[in-house]
Amino acid sequence: MTGYVVASLLELGVLVTDSIITNALSCLRPVVGNLGNTYAMALLAYTFSLAGETSSRAQLLNALDNVAISEGTKLHWSQTTSGDTLAVEISSYVLLAVLSVQPLTTANLGYANRIVNWLVAQQNPYGGFSSTQSSSVAGEVYNFDVNRDNRLLYQEKPLKNVPGRYSVRVKDSTCVSVQVACFYNIPTPIKASRTLSVEVKVARDCKVRGADLMLNITVKYNGAKPTTNMVIVNIKLLSGFTADTSLLGSPLDTFAPLVQRVETGDDHVLVYLKEVPKGVPMTYRLQLKQVLAVQNLKPAVVEVYDYYQPSDVFETTYMPPCP
Image 1 (spheres, one colour):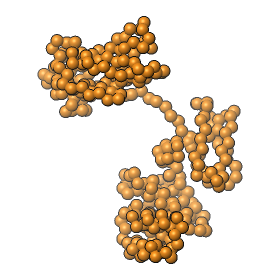
Image 2 (tube, rainbow, N blue to C red):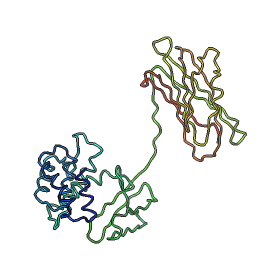
Image 3 (tube, rainbow, N blue to C red):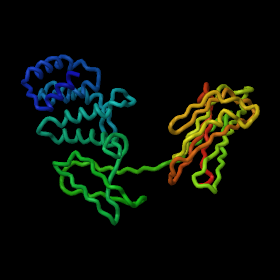
Image 4 (tube, helix red, strand yellow):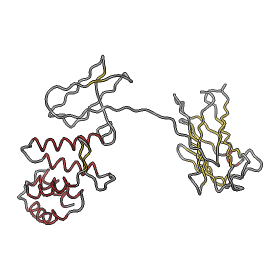
């Protein structure tokens, strides 16, 4: 915390000779050679760089170099060998420490470039951190002007022709990051249980626009035991629809177990069944009312699973039979 506060004050322009800074640095110097925490080493390397204390800075950077994770042209640091959420922050502090002392040598720039290569690979399409990209399409040209005034500004253009071939041309001499992002949807994977299954049949009066939907949800069990444990049916709602759960307490099958509880959320309904007997299909009804017309409606998922063994799960999807 002391290192973070000192770095913040120095960034704001507080002089190194200020008593607050000198006292804080006196507190920090004794721990420089005894740090086992990578995050603290990186932060203090930046702090002492800002303070102009080259000896402490060099000691910390040497220690950090010994624990750096090198991957070809990329370099980064982490609290653990398997990576952690602080890796970006730690690596960024090291980068700031390397770049904060002038003049920069060719060796320093090369070292910094490897850190930047890793950081860029962690970015998401919006300049934050996760995935990447941005460019110009054949037949169409997009110009991005990067100057001193907007160098920290994220700029983007949508690519109209996908798939397509793109190229990037850069004029002048500076360091910039160019990213391209591709978004797509994939179908929800169907999870299959060996013992539980669910089937959904959808009924609707297609002559009436926006008519209600009636879902007939049939749950089956063919496991080794005579009956299941408590079973949960998780019914995701179609976009633009709400659920009327009043019929769920009245199963179509005479011997179907009563619904013990129903929980309704914004986009789903949870149905708690006491049990499902082996080899006896159980059918329940749920009415959906359309409150908003949605174009390009996507299928909704119905999931059934054993309350005490959630890995025993099965999924299916459903759609309205007509618009």
